[in-house]
Image (cartoon, rainbow, N blue to C red):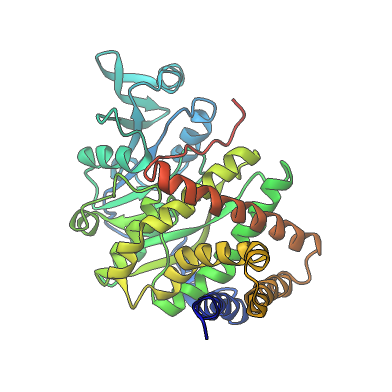
Length: 404
């Protein structure tokens, strides 16, 4: 056996194992875990003494949706005196700042920057990112946490619409000493906008209803999704808050929580969020996710063996997809019959799509086409992520949900 044949066999075995594991997840996927069902009992529950919750909403160039954001937060069913709301802004985001001044009553202002505002009967504090060279979400969160007073910290994106009883559910579940954080499921609210938002809606449905509950069952912990999560302040502080360089601070935080023996619980009371209706920005988001996943490899290693299922899906699967996509080129340049064994992982990959269709049954066949579309976008994003990893590994690609 020569070196080329050894390389081909080793690579195919590695990639096939990764795709076989993905296939395993779909085969044994559970639609709802008992933990998700149990969340319903907390709706309307009276805690007696509610803990102070700090809600942080990072914003950058979100002037178009500020009113929607503030309206959704003002409808949260939790004592206002027990809810600290912080908007994390950038000092150069003048449009967002001016819009806030227009729709809210400014209570306190410093150097022409509002620090305390009132929306209806809700007091809102504003934190500004003091690191001008780093304009990204984790950096803004790290700045906002400095003025946070809550025992529980919650993160929502500007486009999110939380369920009114999220804080109450979170406070109830986090009173359990064995739970460090909870992640609410997410659902795309603008499903009907176009084919891209429809594809993202199906993707979210599969992830939160099948894959993540299965991964959570295998790891005994769910996954932080970037927004719609609540975490105990003392645990977050012990983990040194968020990695300000990471393009995927949520995945980095997940691995750190798992590595330190903490548990994340998935709760099926969805956060409504906006799918991205523009191909350019969707591709940019996915390339950032993949690049961030590859950068979290050191954190994933520290979390082994508990994080193996998550590491396979978020890190090794994108790497494997590069190998499979390169197979036609490999077979052209390598004059060896063994080059054709790349058909094995390809078949395993296609089998996953067949199982997805079975999971979605009796839904329309068009749903499978939508998942294929999002898979093709993710495949292209892998290549972009590799290039970005070389050129600017820590660059933050701003996610845009509305046309500018």
